[in-house]
Each structure stands twice: as C-alpha cells, then as structure tokens.
Amino acid sequence: MNSSTLGVNTSVVEVTHIDSRSMWLYVDGKEHYMPFDEFPWFAEATVRQISNVERQGSDHFHWPSLDVDLTLDMIDYPAKYPRKFR
Image (cartoon, rainbow, N blue to C red; front, side):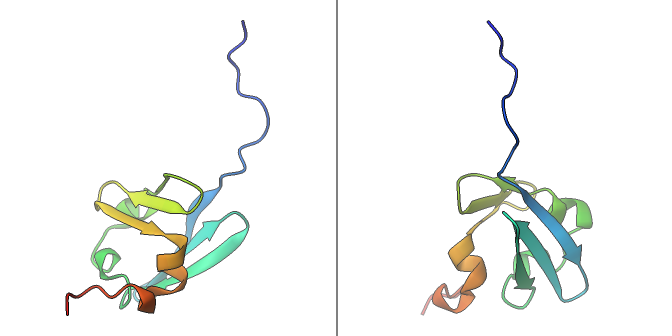
C-alpha cells in the first residue's frame, strides 16, 4: 500500500502583502483586498499571526493565533456583515 500524496495541491491560500492599512489574501489565483478598517482584528496583529492562515473549506479561512474565521463572501463584501449589534 502506498500512502503518498497524488497530484498538486490546488487549495492555495497565502497572505501576499501587509502594510499599515491593509493586507491581501491570495486564494486560488485571485487576490482579495482586506483593509484593516473593515477587518480590525488584523490591525495590531504581527506578521506571523496574519500569515498563519488555514483553509477550512472551499471558501472558509481561519487564523488560529487570532481566533478569526472569515469566508470569501465576508472578505469580498464586508458591508453585508456588520461587526456591531444594532
């Protein structure tokens, strides 16, 4: 029995850029802009914390050291997901 991995990993997720106002998340060949005013959990985080992202499903991402879970829809359309209770 051979338990080696077959094929190429196509589930690429990576933080490609971080600056003082935002970050970019690269998912399956597309970059997603994440301004810190819309995603405040990352504003004071370290580069290591931000870069440590895990893909939990086709469109679900988890930052374990920050305890943050987001979907692509939340990233692309943050206005649909207010952070405050009204």
